[in-house]
Image 1 (cartoon, rainbow, N blue to C red):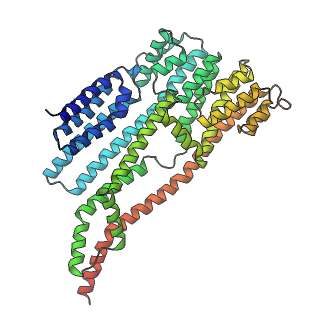
Image 2 (image 1 turned 180 degrees about the vertical axis):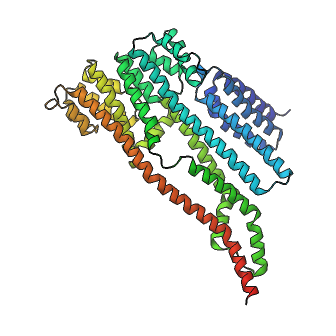
Length: 488
């Protein structure tokens, strides 16, 4: 065995151990290391190391997924490894089925119908997972809030609510109860027992616990989660997975038509009149060829994979409140500097800030301590910098309202703290502003959806129409040529 093979086997052994000890690091770096092993195998002409690369990638995924056997300790990398394994298994099964269909000489239409059916099932499962996650969050915080309002012993109440419920909500309630019994605070118990908890709810829960206002914080969390869950369902022109499904079906149909039908049309036209395919068809062929045989397809796939990975890590870092994460900084920067998205980010941050300021002032906290509590909320880092400047200005003794306006927090928030106008009504005004910004955020979101979705559907229709025209225009040209030959 040469040194290159020993090196690859050593990397395999190290990563199997690293997957058990540090699964997050192993899961994040295994694609790069696998690509390195493949590159080494290609350069040194050692095909045996390709098998090592396969075992390296699959073994790391299996070990990382196995380390998350306990539901209460599962993190984003456990779920990512599990989903990748399921996706690889589904791809292999689909490949076997397609190979069997090819061996049985099944028609192309049957294969397309099979692929479309698999895509429909896959999209339905994703939609079910997203919907169930929102519903689960509503159920969990409704149980906790109701137990707190009725002054029930929380561990016993959670245990009773989870009795007979073997679904995800039951597991979450039992996990939170377990950590409460071990002596954790409610925020820490929710973070440990409910790893998929929304980051904003977790931050608000921790802030309310620090100032002794858990019932009020839970009420604000319930209102926010219910609005985000129910609000978008009231106004939805089409299902969001519909364009994705149409694009995938059109893609597979186009690949099949270009592979099996258009070459025959091209041969017929060349034989009859020595003519080329119509311009639209040639454009479609160049586009598909660039994606299939050139570097464009690989680049697009890599960009999509990088985008999905970045979004996953961004959400995980936000749930864990890891403010030093590069992906969290990158995601906050992109969302803040996009002109259209920035308004949504500011309104969503104001909803959380106004709610916590109201709760803190009602509990009797000084203004500077109330502002200091908002710095722990799950808001955009650039909006948090404005809150930090406001806190420094208030602690220097400057006017609260004027400093809020000068720091870019909005005239509405400054008006709520204007001592000359609202000397004793600040909490009530903050509650009114919180409700206003919450409904304004949902209203603008729904209006944007009603503008963008029809525009996207029109563009989708134009794309499908171009593909149909490009595919059928050669047949029309052949028919016209034959008609001219028959009727001179």
